[in-house]
Length: 114
Image (cartoon, rainbow, N blue to C red; front, side, top):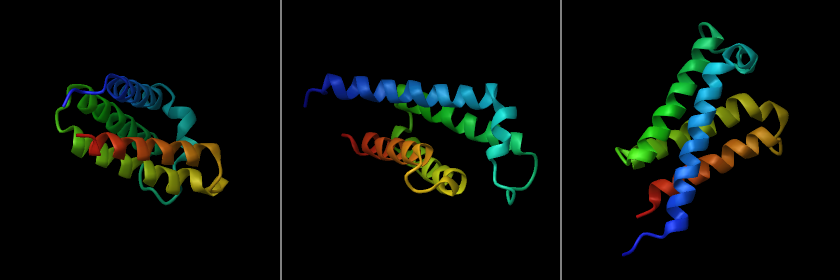
């Protein structure tokens, strides 16, 4: 079956947005460290860097199609965890929680695309 061009464009744009979020985690780790819940062990910046690295690796996997399905499912799990652990305190209808949830659903759609 011939690939649907707009779907591939959306996939590439999603990967670029995820990569930008990863870059943002590295460039603004100090500002984001206040978002890390208190029960997380260690320096909050380390968690920010780990999440940023996961975002960048997921974007690379989507763009190169190396382990894309696994990367998308892991990205969806990470986004949902972040939504519930970090953004849920602002409520289920907060913009950040809804953003994370919608990006997780997009990652699941990409993983399930044949």
